[in-house]
Length: 319
Image (cartoon, rainbow, N blue to C red; front, side):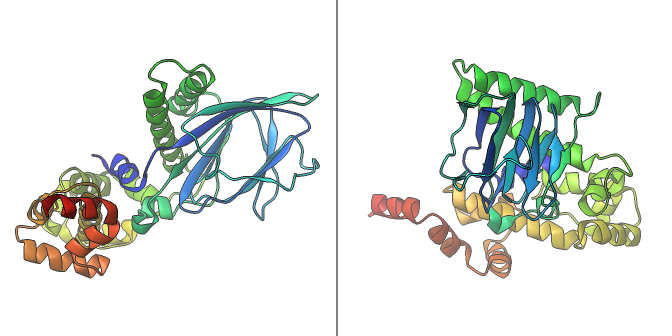
């Protein structure tokens, strides 16, 4: 996988959820914080106001996308002056792959597409960890056509589900998350600060080295071979990689390998020797030592504590 696809696959767990809701003014709704998740809102029709936690009201209109990478709560309302009910919308309790609702009222209609993703906080990638609390992508003619297309397809599928809708909606929600992140990371100079991972992915040399690591983490990469991929000298590559990524090249390689190993231990029954090979270790002993340094647990114990039910079933089967 390329870097961004790999990151999404690594941190998203379970199925995403989505809702297609028509609100009729006057209306206001508080959305609870949802730690360990990310959520989005897209305005499909009409307009409304977003009131972030501790922030000033933000006007939203058709085509605007707002994204909360860290699960922060907010209020959505037809007007900043509309009273907010005491009851909250708890995304965790109301989660469903897709659902539609209409809130009756005498005023103008606002149609919102919203959704959320459960994330694995234990191995949060810096691409996501360093994102701001709120990303607002205003609708601008000709900008982000892929994002707009995904929104239209998702809204149509949720509004009129057909056979296979579960698969289509789940896939479109993943696409929407990728397109939102792309749109933010590809922001025009001056529209937002481009630094850190945004700059790393925009840098041809560093991006090529990261791509190599993510596509083949088991390869015996060295600083020299990664520098060659980047088209830079070893010294220049190490400096630039460390500055943009926040870790030296081989430290990042080890960190990513150990995260991948953790996923394999949690989600497969592959023997430790196979897991070691798939993350670039020829020796199970060397892999176990590296894994324990990173996670604080030996691989076998990590697997048992991460998947106690599955492990217990497996143990009973062999008794």
